[in-house]
Image (cartoon, rainbow, N blue to C red; front, side):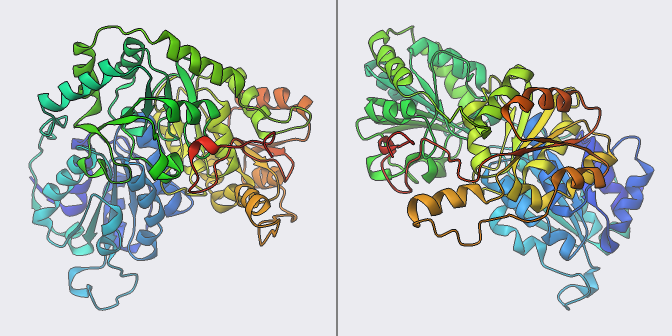
Length: 556
């Protein structure tokens, strides 16, 4: 049948099973929005307050559901406003398809109104970017975009469509999406046997789980693997929930703000098994001395990550779920009781601590964990609150902690929370933010109100840019250059002005009643938590130092 390019866009979305898109209309993309209007009962469109909010919402939807997130924007500033969200998804390997419209083909390259080369702009931060100028190429390009976004190591793909291509007609034939084949072509029996041999010879194995274990859906295989070989498990920020935070083998996060038990344990191990992690500098510290007493075995889908940041002794390249299945088939239960007892002593000697005499972020997050029973999706922005959320909320399941790890995007959390709630409406969704982050994209509160979303915006309000101030205190002799946010902004009034509810917490006694109210609220609610400006995240490893040199307040 003959369809316009805009109708083909909608039909291709339906082909791919897309039920929700996030976006903002404009002149160049009007044809697509007109076609979307005709299918509003099949594809739900969420109008955000800003295109960056749309990209973060699509990202949060993808992370929470495991499906591809989709966002739409018009040409020029609409398209460029997606860039931060696309880069966020790229750094954290999130499957996302961004569809933008551009000026008509005859106007390209002439500095036309609202014209930018968005496909060129996003080239370094996408798996692939396309510009479609001919309607004959549109359907196949969209199908390729969805396949690329999900295949191998996932990531964002951008499809830019000229306005003429959205209006012209061509014959359309519906197609079934290509199957996503799990990557095993680089996996070989020699590498598997080498990995098995290293594990069998190890006396002090330690497992480090990253975001790749979640993306691969390998949580059950990872748990079986850890208990079979009796190895303690730590994780990265992106790996939260890959292994249950409630498990006796779990030691906490690794790296700059990881637990001392994890940092010291990895340093004392004789084999570090890395499952789906890229050795971020925030994890490794000084790469020359990282896990210096251990052989390193890396399991990863992306061959480019092997020996990129840290030299490893062996690797298995391929889908980590399949890799763990193969290892579990070949390994018999092992006994590392002595090693586990050593790690247990580290956990008992170096627990996470905080000042219990006043209202603090960790106290609030612990109470949130108790009240939700750990059964919530937590999104975060970036900074001290993000680290406290990683440290003091226990994540028992994958896809329940959504945070910008690689790019560190302030303003990510509220949009991500909206996307997560749209994708998982039965789940409690809480965004934990700092006041600096909330200011960046708090306009998305109006989006949550417009869509009647019962989500909680928990603002740990210390009236400063907390993490930057922490560095200024510790390393810049308390020169607080432009990190103080003492002004007249009242977040409760902001919430009410946008149609949401607001509540303020100023003491520990108010925490439980306020959170209970917030979690039962029928719509969006902002919880403004007034905490001290000089609270810090501990433990901490100075940038570039050895991870075993983590210090806390007692050490200072």
